[in-house]
Image (cartoon, rainbow, N blue to C red):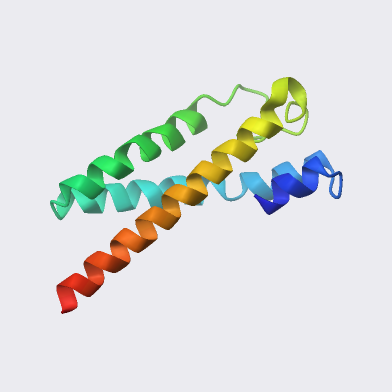
Length: 114
């Protein structure tokens, strides 16, 4: 969110912003897929069903990158067609989702211990 905000305010250029963001796309994809599979294996159905749409969206977004682009975030297209605003909105939604998941996982951990 901070990197996209810096790009919006012209504190950094599009190439460095997209480079910083693209290096985290694959680790996020792998991490979320692993967590989703672990929830399926451990039979936590509600948390699995909560994580499944986000994991699917991450995989879809990674697969649908047009050939010739630098990655999910492309410096030549990030200012076109309001992509910056949509990337910012997506980052805010993911932040909210990850906060929700953090507190759910924390609650589950504490309820198992007590």
